[in-house]
Length: 501
Ligand SMILES: NC(=O)C1=CN([C@@H]2O[C@H](COP(=O)(O)OP(=O)(O)OC[C@H]3O[C@@H](n4cnc5c(N)ncnc54)[C@H](O)[C@@H]3O)[C@@H](O)[C@H]2O)[C@@H](O)CC1
Ligand SMILES: [K+]
Image (cartoon, rainbow, N blue to C red; front, side, top):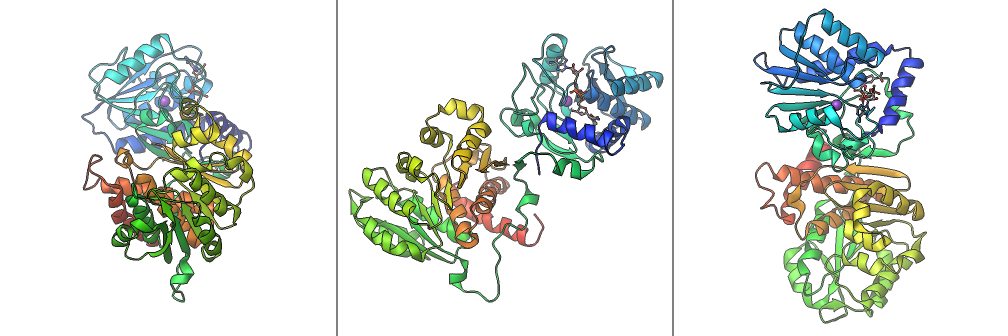
């Protein structure tokens, strides 16, 4: 799903009104009607509903909603924060409610459902005074809070809080989702997000010049590598996993299993000779390319073997458990000098740091840093990256247009060129050593089959994160292990194959 900023959404609304002759009042009526149908399923006639309305069209949506609840006999009250200087459509709908003698409250009382229709995409400055007071009261009430379009106080373009913001249990966003709903801290304030179709022609959204997308389930359809009856193990890609050390033999094992679980046909682990028996016990399906080692880590003598072998593979994964040394930099350089599709993860990214500027035009390259690793790679303070990951990610992908960047955090990003895909699946059960190895394995396993870095990264990120969500049906965020993710990858692939996800 394409994500829009508030300004972009306002221009879509304007075009719908001016070019498609949809009266703005009708759009507001449709917004209120869809809100009514969505909220009706969450409440009963015993509930005491309060709709808090601001002065703009977000408030107008609230007035339409109130009228519809009133007409159906629900216990609904309005809290009008402004009665002067209203937008034209807000004014019409407030007057309509007043003419019908709806109940107006002066403050939050014993309501158990509060609808926040204070500010939407038109929020333009820090919230103060009576608006701040009411939002704080909403946040301390025990009521279920439902925000219209976006929680009031959240900037629709970047998810920042403008002074104070409503903490919603549910956000019902109109026509298409707004970027700020998915970026920290907006994501935390938005609760469960649903999109309501209010009848704006979809072509108007398609035509918006925005390259920011939500990596949702719908996007995953069609991304699975194709399988055919006429095929063999060679058809589905050959992957070489370069990594492992005596201190970290599990990392390469997990990455290898993840690659195989993602459908890759043949897998070879290029690892220090001394950990071969450990990895072989863990990954029965793997072949081996034992590499020279010193102190339990691969040495630069491995470059000779690797140079000869690289042409045989459709994807190389380097980094999982590989450790850090000057020799690892040499090993990585040899692989970068080839044109084999390559994913660099973990300590491979450490080795990449000084090499990176020399490979501006290296094609078929995926890197999977978390925020700290990315900070080190681009020499920018981690707090600045956390504050605006899209800006810093896009600066990087503009400079390195062939690299697919997978930027990992509780909200993760896949970026390539000017395109951004935001992943909000996953949970803090993934915050455990080994989780990144599984992700790197899944993505490179897919890329060995697909030879499409961007699609492999988008689907791989989804398989990894959504597996963690499915695990919560029977486990907790405390107990999930990265190796548990394998159980669910299969369930998701089955869902994608059968179109039942
Ligand atoms: N035709 C349209 O444009 C449609 C708009 N819709 C709704 O309209 C919303 C956007 O409406 P608006 O553009 O009128 O904007 P809002 O309703 O978000 O609010 C704008 C009003 O709030 C005031 N304001 C902004 N920041 C403030 C602050 N910090 N403190 C106090 N006052 C502040 C502005 O001066 C303005 O009066 C959407 O979020 C959506 O809910 C829907 O009704 C669908 C159709
Ligand atoms: K709102």
